[in-house]
Amino acid sequence: MPGFSSIFPPERKVVVLDGGMGTTLQAPPFELGLDSALWSSELLATEPGRAQLDKLHCTWVDAGADVVETCTYQSTLPLFLGDRTSPSSAEIDASLQTMVSALPLACASCSSASHSAPAGGAAVALSLGPYGSSLQPGQEYTGAYPPPFGPAATAAGDAKPACSSAALQAVPLPLEAVRALGVGSASDEELHLAAWHLQRLEHFASVGAPTWDAGIKLLAFETVPSVTEILAIRRAVATFRSSRPAVAEKPFYISLVFPRDTKHSADDAEAPVRFPDPALSHLPSLASQLPTLAQALFAAPREGDSAAYASPDGVGFNCTSPLRAAEVVRGLSSAALEQLAADPATQNKPWFFLYPDGGAIYDVVSRSWHHPAGLTDSAWAALVADAAGIARESGAWGGVGVGGCCKAGPGAIRELRKEVERRGWR
Image (cartoon, rainbow, N blue to C red; front, side, top):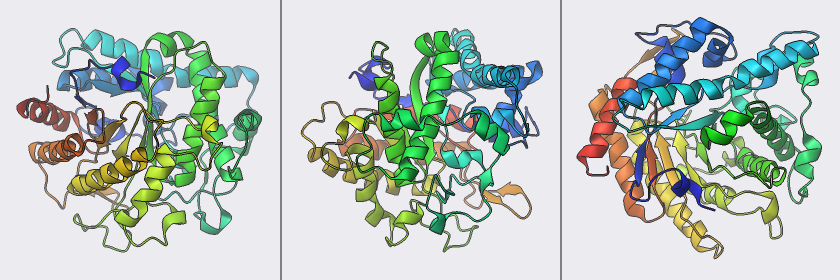
């Protein structure tokens, strides 16, 4: 498989990603109030909302982004159906069209902005958040999913789907499809998560077919907090590809999340980070978790299962403290080298994607952000570039993508682009 070499020129080993969509839309000059379960995706429902998204996509390209994401992170058809108690076929169709409209919108925006952009044009990535982003409250930073998507023993007691039960029943999960490649050692939780991810891929690819085929260049599975969900994503992509043998495969990456250790104060900018999966809570540190993560990302759970699990073309992390980015890059690179060395079938080196948050910490009491680290855009960009340099020098990766997540706005991406060029990577 060509992987990301089919998108980026061979000489381009570092690409710049965009920044945090939702928090940028809440900041000047947009200053939008986003408070629904769909967050940024709620803007797709109105013409003024779509105009704001168009403006934001163009802003990323103007700032120097080589890759711009669609406004689909939290998008699932049940969430677009919302609180409807008995959605009709017409309502389901209309909701699906609204959800999928994010694809042609992003592609058109990037095409129009590319003529004058310093990046010389941007590739559009389909943003796909984890199952936890569809819950209320969100669980993408805990991985504490309720059954049947996670064990009851570690589920967050107050987490539930952010839509009506009728909306879920109107859009049944394709469980039989994910079982078709063989269940093997997969748990029931893995199969349900795989079906959840597969359903979104099928909706975007079928309803948005023209844009999917020609405009979407890569798939970005983001903020993944669970080992089971890593395997589920790989199973979903394998199932999706097997159902479309005549269609060119799109490269995909899986981006993990490493929040601050909850044993430390929420205000502690220097707090250590770790993978939040409750199943790994017995492991004392990030370093002790990394071999398990590398195995989940690159190996099949057991011999004979490989056909059911697609190998990601890239891995990485997002929404993690920039002060810990270098540590995470160093650890993941080392673990990946060891895991990939054990697999003689590996042909192309995967890419590494890192897009930390802007360094801010959210206060749930005051519902406000503050910056204990005091990072300027240029200081943030230097930290991210330093981490990218570690990834480049590790020898583990075929290329590196760098960008930002929550509270990393256009100014930060502009400084990051300058940093990449200053270091001679472009």
